[in-house]
Amino acid sequence: MKKVWFLGVTASCILAACSSEDEQLSADELAEKDWDAIKESAEGAEIGMYMWGGDDSVNRYIDDIVVPHLDENYDVTLERYPMDAPDFLNRLMSEKEAGDQDGTADVLWINGENFRTAKQNDLLYGEFTHLLPNMEEYIGDEASFVHIDMGTEIEGYEAPWGNVQFAFQYDADRVDDPPSTMDELIEWSIDNPGEFTYPNVNDFTGNSFISHMLYSVADSPDELEEYDEEWLRANEEELWSKLNDFQDSLWREGQTYPDDLSQLDQMYADGEVSFTMGFNEHRAESMIEDDVFPESTETIFLEEPGSIGSTHYLSMPFNTTEPEAALIAINYMISAEAQIKKLDPSLWGEGHVLDSDLLSEEQQAEIEEHLGDDAVEADADIILPELDSRYHDWIIDRWEEEVVQ
Image 1 (tube, rainbow, N blue to C red):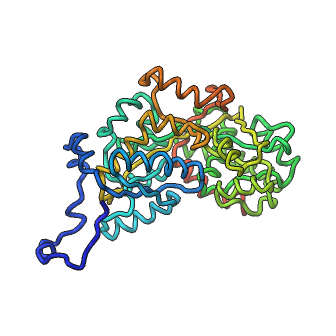
Image 2: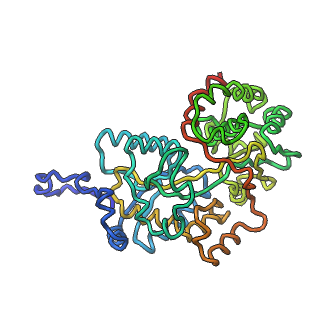
Image 3: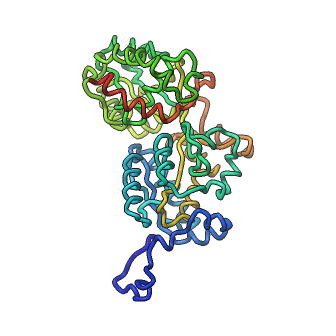
């Protein structure tokens, strides 16, 4: 439980220089505990979770499924703190520099370049995924996303939580013939000025849109398998030319861009633009159900260059004060039960990280039932690997100069 300090702190504690740092359980010490001892230590704990809060369906899933389960089954209280990953990383960086071992959060929703930054700057708790029973029982170690996150070795510092594909949502009442390739999308934007845009590239979704443009410039996805500065120098002129060719046709003539996906979604909901986009091919269902998106919303993938797949993860900060309770929460969120519930479009409608070979027939049937006959699924032939996070940084460094200015 988060520590509460009283005025009557004893002199003996002061003399002993008691501190949260002395009480913190290290990753090595935690590894010596068996799961029953971890559960016992977690009872009564209050933990916080830093997570993006821009999607009501995601928040509803945490509040209605995860929070009650942890409370009823483990006496663990979870509170979510809506915050973008760069913001909580800045906070953790400041706490690290100040030697603050009494952290606010115990669980992090993280991936990609943010995971790389956190790992390189020692902002994470340490290796822990080998302690999670559900990691072995339902996920295993065969999938590449268990080992590599956008070019960064995971080494047990984060557990996979969800798999999604990049897709576009459009208003079928306004778009008669939706594009199926990047070139067709550019052409549609030019023919329909002001009806399309993408978020600023500091936003993960906007950056990922440019990543698709990178794939469209490449002769083969294999060219981008590893980060290659020489390839970028040889091909960036074509990339920026492609973006500049249709910039004037964008919303507000490309003079400004939505700050993030939440703003683009709102613009789409308000009818300012005819398209939005994002990772999670099933997200339109819950947005329609919540009366955010129009009922005429449809979802498409671009057949060329394809659709980038993305995995996101759960980790722990270096200064968690409740590592046992954090493990309990993460272990539940990667369980077959929680992952299957997450498929429900009325709750979240997001892809799972389970290995189907490790599931029972009943669990597989539940997954099929949630997906349904009309589920939007990307063709395996068009699924693209997530790019090394250094491409993400390169896009941020170059985009404003080459496109905005």
